[in-house]
Amino acid sequence: MYGDKVMEHFRNPHNFGELKDADAVGKVGNPTCGDLMWIYIKVGKNEKGEEIISDITFKTFGCVAAIANSSILTDMVKGWTLEKAEKVSKEDLLKEMDGVPPIKIHCSILAADGVKAAIKEYREKKRKE
Amino acid sequence: MKRIYMDHAATSPLDAEVLKAMEPFFSEKFGNSSSLHSFGKEAKGGLDWAREKVAEAINAKPKEIIFTSGGTESDNLALKGIAYAYRSKGNHIITTKIEHHAVLHTCEFLEKNGFDVTYLGVDKYGFVDLDELRNAITDKTILVSVMHANNEIGTIEPVEEIGKICRENGVKFHTDAVQTAGKVPIDVEKMNIDALSISGHKIYGPKGVGVLYLREGTSLEPQTLGGGHEFGKRSGTENIAGIVGLGKAMELAVKRMARESVRLALLQDKLSDKIQERVDGVKLNGHPEKRLPGNANFSFDFIEGEGLIMHLDMEGIAASTGSACSTKSLEPSHVLTAIGLSHVQAHGSLRISLGKDNTEEDVDYLVGVLPPIIKKLREMSPLNKDNVKEFENFGDSEHKH
Image (cartoon, rainbow over all chains, first blue to last red; front, top):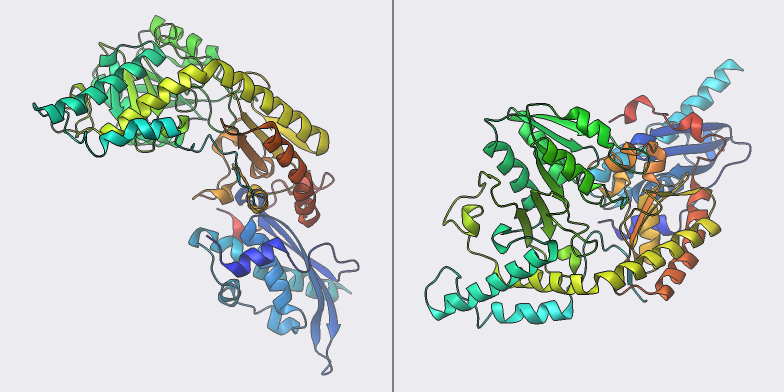
């Protein structure tokens, strides 16, 4: 039911675990439908002085699709500017996933929301400082 | 890699002896049992033989055995057939919250068509409360349907007592025995059962064939009309090869029952003990003793079942889960939530159902590969014993269903 890429990321997920000294954590999901995801981000700056995601990890309670998209998305947005990352589209992520059954679409795009939630938390924290 | 099948509650492999018994009925004995010639008689011979075997297995009469396309059709036929036949007497049906969807969705259909249905809850082991059942019966009640054993947690319901209560109140009693027929003794007389569903493929028989036992004198509105086959209760040219296969499978199951049920129960005990010894945060769902031989259902804290099943599959083990992600819906198992598990616990369930080819070595292999899988999934999970209470009912607004 899943494509090879999803299965490979499920088998050997990248970037999992808690990120020590994370600047923000995005918490998304709903245990009723079986997925909870924490996206940890660390924010740095590129040569142009723009804020970028310098490091990113995840912790996921969820199915194969939920774990695989956590891995795929964290790979994808590492190094991106916050501005670009907060606009990451569900379609982009689904395309990267390369093959999930329709019933799994909702858990296959959860990481995109996780990243957005983390960036939002980061910006709110900064505002309060 | 060696593959080990431990999902017998889902389906089972066809027994070689069953296949042998079926074979002639695909080719040389291909007749239509309704025909008058010798070809027809050969087919009729197979049909009659199988009917006797099934009747013997549950202490019924051959004329009380109706062959169907499987457990789902038997449940549909029993519920709709009895409900419509007794409509003038009343419109109330009693069932439980832990029935198979073949019963639950049929009850929902009947609710839309003028019947009232009471869904009895169960205790933490999955048992129906007999007093609650007694209290639920009204003068409008025409039918009670309670499964013999639950397909997920394996709990065996007190059907004999339920049958007695139904008989005393003049209410028809149906039981879904798809998980128990051929595995646990069934006596429709002693248990006061009026209707009972059986499936062929759970007992090393073929798929696509089942039985509805219907007590003589019980009215039933047929749901499939045609040439009047199966005593006018279920029309359609009989699936003779499948029916003979079911008959043979039942004959073998009854012959092997005493020995096999003890062997499977011992294997299951060993499995449960070892898993609970080697993994923290695990709970055996269902009753410790009153359960289907070979069924073990566990909840592992903080992890989700689909990932667990896929990791086991990569190790060659086939099992199943009550997690939402394993089904076509996004809700976790209705059975696990009915016995009081939280959604998180229900999502972390693993069902092992052992069968005739499983050995002690298979159990040892499972017990060996399971703990590292659980450990890996827990390392990946945001949940732990300190925060699980806090996040059990977590839900960001966008992910409500």
